Amino acid sequence: MVRTLLVRGMLVGLLAGVLGFVFAYLVGEPPVDAAIAIEESAAAAAGGASGDEPEVVSRLVQSTLGLLTALAVFGAALGGIFGLAFAYAQGRLGRIGPRGTAAFLAVAGFISLVLVPQIKYPANPPAVGSPDTIDIRTGLYFTLILLSVVAALAALAIGRRLVAQYGTWNAALIGGGVYVVAMALAMFVMPTINEVPAEFAPAVLWDFRVATIGLQVVLWTTLGVAFGLLSSRQTSAASRGG
Amino acid sequence: MTDFTHFPSAKPAVIPVSEILPWAVFAGLLSLLAIYFIGAEQGAVALFQGEFIHEFVHDGRHLLGFPCH
Image (cartoon, rainbow over all chains, first blue to last red; front, side, top):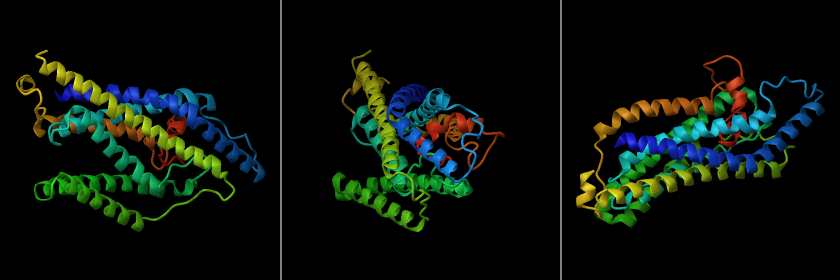
């Protein structure tokens, strides 16, 4: 049973990665190219020998095969974890069924792994971010994601304990409140990083960040909907005696 | 699986943690390693020398929101 769910998660994740590639290529690449153009013109203006930096991987490969590989591997890995989370959540979240369970996991994963951490440490296009601070930025980014997952699991556990006393709706509100307060505190305490150069085009930054959130919406929606669809088919087939 | 046959509208069978755990540990580790290579290798830390992996997945890394460089 776990094997089925793991394989299903990885396949659905692969599909999510491929769909994400289509979105990222069409919507994400234009602002990435624009940011690289800004980076190169800034380097040229600074008197550096622009364009002389040797390209390890060409822009064409980066924006096609490299992007597809990154999203397919990321999607399959995320989907595998999703399938395992589903294996645990199934039947433990009340009577919401397989489609509801998959949708709940996708929404919870998107909010806790992407949306909330990105509020504090948003994605940056090329040309933004100093190589000197990559260590600290990477550490802070993953720390906040870890804190967010811990806070979400704690909020879920607290909410579940309160269901009997306050009812499902109020217990869910309290659990959600616990998560919001915990993450607000974490974000307040953790250092803010803004390395966007003053002369960087705001519209490019906006387009890039909207594209990154859009890509995650594509990934998580595919995971939640497709995984739920396949699981509910299996369940109804089983209940028909198949 | 037979539970579905007898109680089609009831909760699906709960899979015991002991059955999930080995899969979760092994596949979870592999998945996190894969995500590490897409998201962070040859950035802040590097298992392999050079910058090919970083440059190859460069656009995906930026667009997935990982700190790239």
